Length: 190
Image (tube, rainbow, N blue to C red; front, side):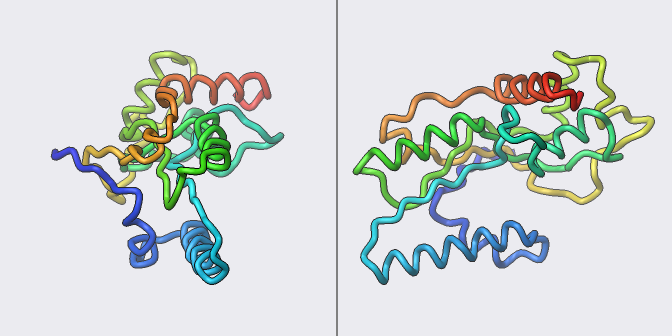
């Protein structure tokens, strides 16, 4: 499959035009559009950091919706895993990006934060190799890849704008999911 780059400036309209849009994505998109409108009206300089699927240790007492999905997949509790390839980013990289754009006067526009893109089946296999005692969603007797096809094209997300501001290399998929599972274990979710 071709490797395509997803530009950090062309997604805002696409999100609102799909029938599969979740209310969460729709609300975030509407809020960002309103922020851009208000910034323009008031002459404010707005910088937006758009992370992909955020992974890492729990920062709150309970997992977020993203981390609940990872937890359910790890426990084999969903019955299927998403049939999609998507970008992932460590929560530490998201926090560092927000700090950077607040402190760096050259920061402008929309900045994408994403480490690596992978299909969920690849994530499960990576986790199974490190944590073999968990059920996972790919035990084919009990679970299957979702029939609802998502974006399975190999792709990257264009993070060149934030790299030009001096952002260091992203944490790896292994690091973000290891930090996530270690946190689940420490907080007795696994």
